[in-house]
Image 1 (tube, rainbow, N blue to C red):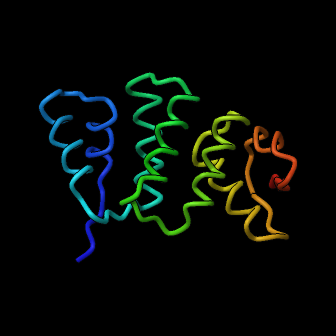
Image 2 (image 1 turned 90 degrees about the horizontal axis):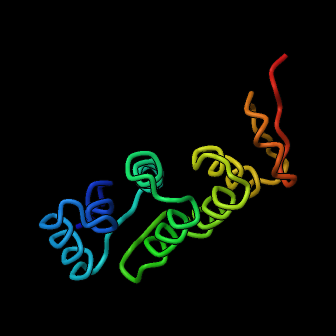
Length: 131
């Protein structure tokens, strides 16, 4: 049986807010053998930590890398998530845009259609802006 993780388990564990739920989430994560982390849930976790809890970007990236790299966390493509977190942290893009960058880098010859000029900070991908 596959156990899918929801954002609230990760956020409660990372913030320990509220403390009672934080303890339960931490124990659940520690005791579980295999948990599937969908990419969308990591994206929402990044958003909640940064926008709701006001966690600084480098700390969000550090915590998220720890989640992706945990012994019992399964993802579709951990290397792509780590790359997206690197772009998010260092190029200061939203996680969604950083994820698009990681996808485009993984599929050589791909480009990103976007009005967001911030993507241009990442030289490894081409941004196409509709005219």
